Length: 466
Image (cartoon, rainbow, N blue to C red):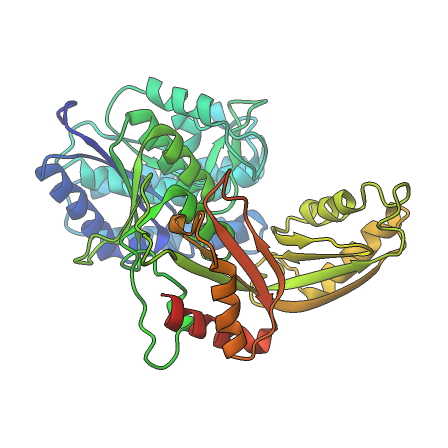
């Protein structure tokens, strides 16, 4: 592959690799990009559902042999007519043997001291990535697969963020043609050991690869045609989902952090820092998807870029000592630390006087495996405050949180009034309204509504503002 060709990093998620035919579709996509004059570099997630099955293996809920038999059957279908099927199957079985060694003892060779859960869960990316490597070798001679650990991605801690500068430097130092897997990196204290990254971290791995290789663009392949201006499943009647043609990095970060996971926010920030454009699109779609770059698609006539939303848990702490200069000092920090230590994402804190309300990603519709519901939020806050000598009373309920962002909102008078007017016309009460500082970031307005008004509010805003 000619080194002078412009690099294009393409991340394929689990839904892009769900069926045997999908692997051939991805390989053909890479080939078409290569033949069009690009130097495509693939970054893959595990196949859909595989990480959950590997977790069951790690927890001894499913025998490794049962998992291995299913994977062999799947990849036999992928490689059914290829001459390199036996070679791939030997690589697959070698991976199962290494997993068995890690599960049953300290491991072997370079895996001797590895973190067991991290290594086992990384097998999903490794299996899919190795299969892709064989298919891509048809037109990229000598291509090899590197998982995040072997590529040199450095994790700052288990299930945490990455060290961007060190990771980019390490990836740069690898010589050759590679495709990459996400989800894991190396332990900063023990580089030989695997270390899981945080949620949706393959997006971050792809951004690191794009930064290291000097890619012009990074494509994130999804099962939708791009980023919609709001969640299509919430639109009613004549409301039609519309793909946003262009977003700024700041707009995309605001959307992602407020209920609509466009792409991992760290991946956005890495690409912004290294000047890599991102395109969100589908594999088989005919459109250009959504381009994320330094420039926004908003203007004076259309100042709003997108509406993001979610149903969350709202916890309100009431304590008469909260505004006391002595006893109340550090109260807000205590509340934030209790929730953060529980792994909850804090969306929208407000704290006037003797009451403090916090919206967290732990409502009934967003637990998604985190095991947190509204009752849990209340009890954990109450318990944590008591341990810190606080006597506050905690009230928790579900609430709808809505966020609107757009670069053209900057310096525009009347934005909050316009949004509030739409809610007033629909007889919807708003609470916890806030506005970001336009001088240091992309403009954003957020507010909350009662759950029973959630869909009504979104549809009214979609009709009248978008």
